Length: 95
Image 1 (cartoon, rainbow, N blue to C red):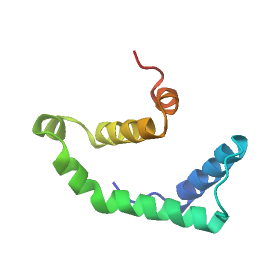
Image 2 (cartoon, rainbow, N blue to C red):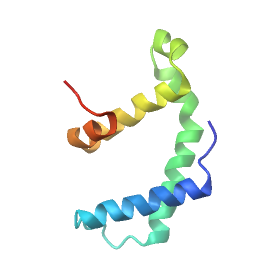
Image 3 (cartoon, rainbow, N blue to C red):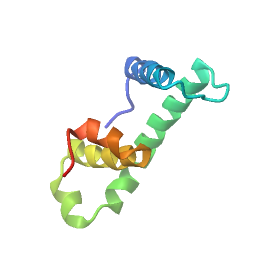
Image 4 (cartoon, one colour):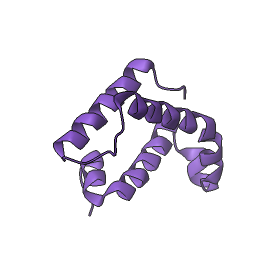
């Protein structure tokens, strides 16, 4: 998987700004360009470390899941670290 295109990184940056603004969440003097640099660094980290993540998966999921499926698992686990409700919005429900 390649690093996200610049247009997608900008969409993420704008979406995060809108999300945090709607929550009136204070982002301690973080400028738009500083947020964008955090998005860029995160995307690059994912690109750089994808082999490590893949190697950390148990053998059967590593061999049988697609890249998209592995990425979704990663995203949902990360979303749970934000909040359970946030993760539920991503995947539509959890029993």
